[in-house]
Length: 137
Image (cartoon, rainbow, N blue to C red; front, side, top):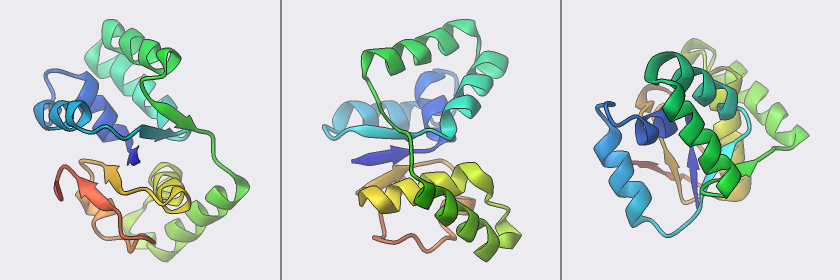
């Protein structure tokens, strides 16, 4: 499975994004499910609505409803792990969302994390050492 972060989903939906082609190709080529941690949903919704447009926002919501992505609603342990990561990597200022993405990827033993945020995800030691896509593709 592939766990996606906010930037990957925005790039996938936004045809004008510089990373769109890479994520589109990856999404179409991979047969395994893309899992969206609950914490990215408000960020994706906001960024699509304010920077891409209402049609993109509606398309994303339609994809969620149709099951194009799996949504992982998380556990209390994910929140603790996100908090611990944020404290451990204080200088990175990971925050809740990136911490939750990592926690979900670790718990689900994801093969990969889809991300454009190599500054954060590339600096953190992630249990299970998932690939960072598309970088490690």
